[in-house]
Every structure is written in C-alpha cells, then in structure tokens.
Amino acid sequence: MLAHTTTVAFEGLEARAVDVQCAVSPGLPGFSIVGLPDKAVSEARDRIRTALAEQGIALPSKKVTVNLSPADLPKEGAHFDLPIALSLLAALELVPSEAVSRAVSIGEMSLDGSLVAVAGALPAAVTAGSLDADLLCPEACGPEAAWVGATPVYAARSIKALIDHLTGNAPLDRAAKGRLPDPVAGPCLRDVRGQERAKRALEIAAAGRHHLFMSGPPGAGKSMLAARLPGLLPPLSAMESLETSMIHSLAGTLDEGGILQARPFQEPHHTASKAAIVGGGKRAGPGQISLAHNGVLFMDEFPEFQREVLESLRQPIETGEVTIARANAHVRYPCRFLLVAAANPCRCGMLFDADAACSRAPVCGEDYMKKISGPLMDRFDLRLEVPAVEIADLALPQSGDGSAEVATRVAAARAIQAARFADDPAVTVNADVAADALAEVATPDADGQDMLRKAADRFRLSARGYHRVLKVARTVADLDASDVVRRPHVAEALSYRLVTQP
Image (cartoon, rainbow, N blue to C red; front, side):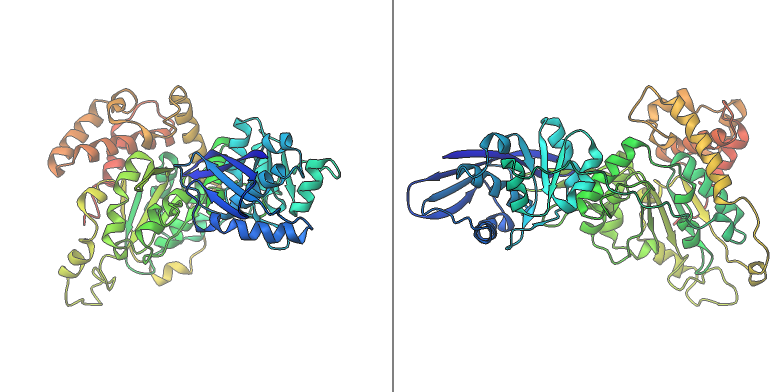
C-alpha cells in the first residue's frame, strides 16, 4: 500500500513543499527513510514506532519505506515526525488516505504520542495556503499558524487526537489566532537629560531609517538613546508584521502564539560570532540582522566586535538581504534594519577627558577605531559625538519633547515618503532610494547644491557619502514638511556626516 502527504523544508524564509511518500511492502521487516534526511529526521522512525505502539498500533512485519521528495533537497528538523507518521497510518489504512494527501503537516512526536511544538509554523501555514491545503500541527503551534488566515489550521495535542479527527470520530475545531500581548510602553526620550543634538539625530534616523553611529565616553547616554529609538518608529504594517513574524517563527522566538506588533530591537553582545550576527550554523538559521528586520539592530561597543563580523555587515546594509552560502544551497533572509552603533572614543573611554590624562592619547583612539574600516563607516548616514553629561544636569527636571511627540513627527514624515514612493514597492523610506533616482526626489535648491558641492570637494566625500547626505537632507526636509530640499536641510545633513571619523 502506498500513501503520501505533504510537509515543508525550510530554505531561508521560504517553506518548500515536500512530498512524503510511504510504502508498506512485503520483504524483510524494516523502517527506512530516504531523501537526504538529517540525523533528526532519520531518528523519526524510532519515535514513531514507539509512539504508535503506545496507542496500540503495532507496525506489521513488512518493509516500510518513506521517501522525502524532492530527494536532492536536504531535510532537516524534527518537524518531519508528524507527516511521516500520517503517511504511514494512511499506508496501513488506519486513516483515510484522501484526507492525509490533502493536508500539510508539521510536528515532533514524543514517545507517548503527544505532539511537540516546532519552529516555522507561520511559513508552513503560508505554504499550506498556497497549496489550498489544511495545516495539521501540534496544539502549541495552532495559535501562531492561524494568523496567516489563508488556510484552515487544525492543532492537536496528540497523534491519537489527529487520528480521531481524520477518521471523523472526534473532529477538531479550527485553531484560533493567538492572543496578542498587551502593548508595553517603552522608555521615554524625555528621560534622557541633555543630549538634544543626539535626540534630533534619533528623530532623523527614525524618519528615514538612516544608520546612526554614536561615539562618546562611558555613561554619556548612548545606550539610553538607542533603547528609546523603537518608541519613535511607526507601528508595523500588516505585511511587515507577517514577514518579520515569519523570521521569528523560524527562530522559535514568538511568544504565546502571537505575532509581532512592535518593531524588533536586537542587541547582540560584542562577543557574538559571525553566524550569530548574519545567520548560519548547521541549519543556516536567521541571525541577529534578520531578526532585526523592519526594526533596530543596536551594536554597543562596536569596535569590540570581531573585525570579520563588522565587515560582514557591509553587503546586507546595502542590499537589505543576506545570503548564506552552502555547498548545496544558497539561503536568503531579508534584513532591512536600522543599524545603531555605539563606541567609546578609545579603549579606556577617556580620550577627550583632560582630567584623566590618558598617557597613550591620541594613539589610543586611533588604534581602537581602526577595526572600523572606512567603507563600513561610510555606510553610516549619521555620525554623532555624544558628550559626557554634567552631574549637575542630572538633577534638572525633564525637558524637551517626549517619545510620543517625536513619534508623531516621524509618522508624518514617513507618511510623506509613503506617498512619494507609492508606485515603487521596493522603496518605503528615503534610505531605500537608489542613487540614480535621487535627482528626482532629493535635488536641493541652488543654495543647497552650492553648499553640498563645496563640502564634497573640501572634505572629499565619496560617491556613497554624497548620496547619503542627499538622502538625509531629504528626510530633514520631510520632517520640516518642505517639498524642496533647502540649504538649511543640507547643512544639517552635512553636520552629521563630517564628524566622528575613525
């Protein structure tokens, strides 16, 4: 008897359909799985045999062969347990083969027959919807998968519950969407004393998704400023929320079956490896830059990261996606993030403190910042020196606009950009504009062009630096609700470009 069902294999954000074929035929008793299974998939036969025995189902003394097609696609993960078990049950005529063949399933099986949650329920549901098939999954995955809304999702606690559902003895109800967590108010920008110039840089960065580099002594407030940046960004759109949640679903970081509402804020430690930052590892999983997709990636102690890690950021910053090369595949993940980097001016952090009297100044600072290459620094649109805060200033009352007021201005600027780029789905903010399209949207007036040309000659701006100044100037004009990029807008953009050189 031959039966089949469908599951998925993950290649980056894509969940590729896999046909799970099971044949029970005369021959020496055995249970084999073919089709490039990894160790976790190969071990499924022992989990399935024991789990079915716990339900009173004994495998016949025949040859059981399971083929995972396409055979040249690597199969990784324990989520193949459930589809293999269902195809086997259909081959044994214990469940209707028609019902199994029309379903996509994922799930890990325990030895007692219970189903264990697995990562990737959201991408699997998207694939099931494209195939016009039901999704069968563990109970814990149902609330997450139901958010896709394109396919019926049936979530069971055990393999016995699924057997009863497929045979019609006890049909399962469709899984409901998971409960969204109550929104949590983030820290307010008004909590930061002083640093008005830095607050303005955060507003510009949020409005146009411009990468920001901050340098200053320890305790100046760099981390406090970065932590308040997500509160300035507009909420995720429906498409952004689904795409970002799919990445987190693959990483297994979604909570309570919900999807992301707030923009992610990833803060990797400076000891993180290249695979942890850009993605990779045994299963080529998403890294911190992909988990920060549509959100903020904050890299504190920037020069302390391995140089290989820092240089690996250059291409993803430009393209908005990262490609993880493997011998038999190239896995791609989106990673359109806002990078905020913070660094002390030197290893001791007291380079500009006259009272500290660093004996190695200025060589100390030069050596410390050499790990940040010129091409990488060139990719930061905004560069900012964050001075130390006087102790007396800490006792002053809160001042300036709070996060809510700044977020309102950012939302208005983002709305202007959305209308401007409505015909180009690849461009959502000014930072996305291609260099050859800048002349149409960001050409300054005569005074602004004159200032920019002189600054480019005087400070020897690279072509990338020149274009990024134009993008920032366009964002400053949007915050000013100005259709034209004027000289003051260019001047402010230049003021954030011509400082903090490594």
